[in-house]
Length: 493
Image (cartoon, rainbow, N blue to C red; front, side):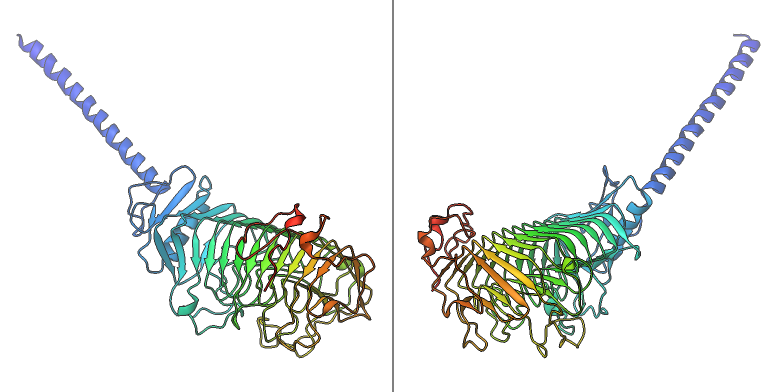
């Protein structure tokens, strides 16, 4: 091989080697760029050490290092809020998922943004720390923007209010609400287990399109759901054990539906008030429906309907429709007199039909209000002695096609109580009774009201489709809404 050929080979090899080096450098540079892009999109933080990236639309929060953000059981709201911040900055993601089994201990509030879902496994628990010492009206979960929020879903996991390890704060005064949204729109809370709290399960203020369903609520500390100044509120298929106030509460809210819920309580001074509370003090409340609920053994009335505090027009408080509900032994509180099945005042043209009242205390349907000097607890203040009297006249309640049986005396000041239907306000309120079945009521059927169409037979022998169905302690789920011939085959003791 000549020297000229050798020089040519060396020159070609030098050029080829240069090309190879450039090619390798380009590959390395590409890898660096890709790595930088991945890091900028899925940053790793001290609490985010997993090699996983958010999948699909979901960012995972875990306690075992298998997710995108890892909690260590201390100040876990930090990592959860980091996950929400990440979702807010990357709108292609919509969901923060809490993996279970794990308890996420929080020492501060969790903040949610618009168009976001907070979900979790049933074994994932958000729990307030011991002795949190938060100020009033600081909730466990709320919105990141104080001016408003929309498009939020909270579902699937457990919230433990840790009541017994925060006994320095009273129940019902705005401490440790589990969820609180204001100026909100299109919000859903469902399939949750919320328990042992000091305040609300969910408080919604000045909001619209509120849905609350398939939840189990046990001894929150105020209301299960409290919708104040809201529009289009619906709560259904919830199982609620009341403590301190009500299971479901609507105040100055309209277009409200509460249906197909099971609400009960327990016998204790902290056991709360009504199963369902509908209030009107301002605004318009003329489209409220309460139906297909089973309300049993509440400490206060089964349903409390009250309009009060200032004058208002007839159109501002009317047309509440209560139907196909079962009331069983409601009104057990021995310390108040405003107990019963339905206690109502201050509403026009209320229609109560096709309900069954079995063994309630005081009376099935009562027109009255707590008198001046009665402390209505709680009120978020120490001034619970407020005037709850209605300011107008001509309030009418239509009561038809109901079964009212086995009414008992109330436990506080029992003398003169135990009627089927009672009107303590005959100068301003009227009850119209049509085609009800009344039977075996302790003091008789009526006080300050009467009927020419009611019937007085054992409900088990009825041949008419009235009432809401059969109920017994042995078969609590056996509610037949159409076959009335089996109603009350087992009477209260």
